[in-house]
Amino acid sequence: MTGSRTPRNRTPAKRADPVRRAAYQIVRQVNGADGYGNLVLGKVLREERLTGRDAAFCTELVHGTLRWQGTYDDILARCVTRPLADLDADLLDVLRLGTHQLLRMRVGSHAAVSETVTLARAELGQRRTGLVNAVLRKVSQRSLDQWVDAVAPADRIGRLAVANAHPRWVVEAFADALGGDLDEVEQLLAADNEPPRVALVARPGLATTDELRAAAPASTPGEWSPYAVVLDSGDPGAIPAVADGRAGVQDEGSQLVALALAAAPVEGRDERWLDLCAGPGGKSALLAAVGAGRGVTLTAVEPLPHRAELVRENLRAVPGDHRVLVVDGTQPTWEQGGFDRVLADVPCTGLGALRRRPEARWRRTPDDVEALRPLQERLLGSALDSVRPGGVVAYVTCSPHRTETRAVVDAVLGGRDDAELVDARPSMPGVEHLGDGPDVQLWPHRHGTDAMYLALIRRS
Ligand SMILES: C[S@@+](CC[C@H](N)C(=O)[O-])C[C@H]1O[C@@H](n2cnc3c(N)ncnc32)[C@H](O)[C@@H]1O
Image (cartoon, rainbow, N blue to C red; front, side):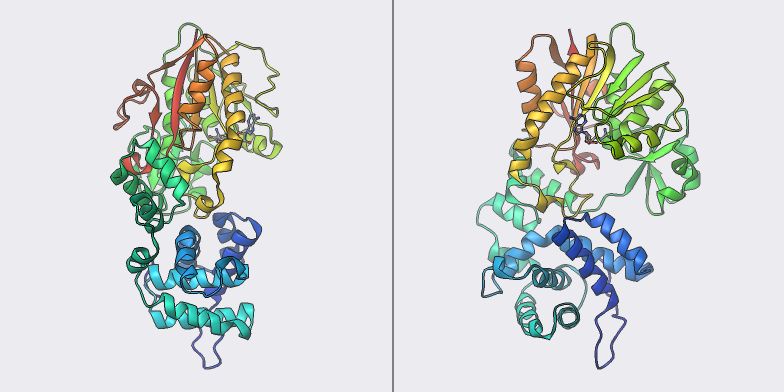
């Protein structure tokens, strides 16, 4: 939570606070036009030239409002006489912004209500100010904890969902993946509500962690990956090694799964590697850099041209004759059974990276999980067809939802007799809390990484 902040305008004919107006514009673009919170926030902060405390206040207001909006809607539903669905979307966003200031920011109740009423007057017109004032006064009568007591369902999962601002179906999926341990689920939900620090990767052979730490003194070594540096603050783009592609921004979980594929034992030849779902290319670049020291050539596949371009950019500093193919990974244009190692980092719901994208949890639906599954199975099948006998495939998601992880692996391996799971844990040396294997699930609350899933599969 951000400290209190004095609004810029306190004149009698009060004008809306420009920082709150900026926050409103951002939340509207995200909720009304399917924008991405982080991207819209960055753009509006630049356009409005907001810096320092103003930028910090705007960021906290936007991120918090987007992250908590499902819970705020449950609360607002108790404070509005009509069904929430009948409210205009712009009015609802103003109420959510006010509610966040009242319940989770150190803004005094009076300021939170009056600034939001002034915002409503500026953005929605005088006619709606009465409703905003009345509703926010009701919201201000209880603390967040008291509201959770009032609106949460009685069962533990329902309460965890409301108290930690996650949709119920997501909490159920996390509980399933964590074996039903709801105390641990609670830790995970809390970790999801903390924006992560920026992690960098020093691509081996191109940059070192010492170089990154010298360029970014406010940093610490990564906890797990030997190539990771974690920034306390500062702009990663200002670090020369990042700017010229010798290093990159990459979560430690993503580093670990790529490094695990490179470390897994294979028999015989080890010089042709395939990244089947490569865009934007963070793992391609790490694999290519690791492989460059071992005489490896990487083929990266990405069907979307703009994402394939990002893969090329990510690979630009890595020596070697690497190829980027702009094709569908399920329609191979390459020789079958020709690769020694294959990464299938398949499109998924991203439920393992909710801490990065404040609005994402409310956008995803259980239908998305089902809709992605056939493609995930086809891509894993294609990866297994692409690897030679004795070679290894890494199936990876940035979601811990079992339908996207173990269920896909089981379904694909159940249909063929030329592939078997191998224990992935020895390929992550030094990493703790890896469970019973053979596959591995990383977690924000256990490892401080995104919730990356990894299964290593050997072709026979
Ligand atoms: C989870 S992302 C991969 C992230 C990437 N490995 C990295 O570390 O930067 C999945 C990628 O798969 C791509 N994709 C979607 N459909 C695909 C298909 N049929 N074949 C191959 N890739 C596909 C998406 O465009 C997306 O870029």
